[in-house]
Image 1 (cartoon, rainbow, N blue to C red):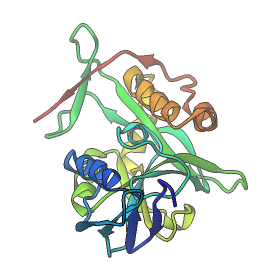
Image 2 (image 1 turned 120 degrees about the horizontal axis):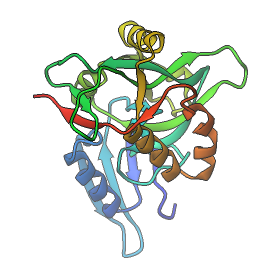
Image 3 (image 1 turned 180 degrees about the vertical axis):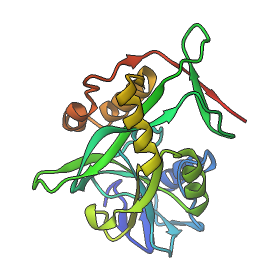
Length: 243
């Protein structure tokens, strides 16, 4: 099998102890769900198998914006437990949700301009819309998650609602979640567009572009047109986290 793991949902056989150690360190930083247990079985100097006991159905979250820029092991379109690139069919990516920068929400964020002023704007983020076009598909990164991580993401993604899109992604039978714009998040975007106060944080756009660039030239080319801000101004902002 070389260095490629043989993945069967319910039991993962990794090609080396080193790979599992990498995944374990990543989980400690809160990036992915940590295996229930792992046992290294030495099979000679050239071949060592690590068996990770993951008996539950794996779960992933599909990142099509800033989540695709998360650090971690390199991803490809080969289905792997540490993450993989995939297409979400039946949807298109667009700018479509916003936060009201005038409001303070505990544990959330707000933005200032580089001079420290807090502009009265609606900061805009990417969204997904269903499409009946035969070619409709959004590329992105499937990141493994467990229930505690989903709770954290649900709080973080306040402009969105989490929905199950397992039937729209080839993930080998795993469950895949995605965050789509909420009714309120889309209403804020509409208000911002209507009042001319919708803006895109330049750093957010850079993070998304860098994330897809890291996935390879082909993936960046596929997503590039959907990142076009159109008439929405791209503004340099400084993000602040509220307690």
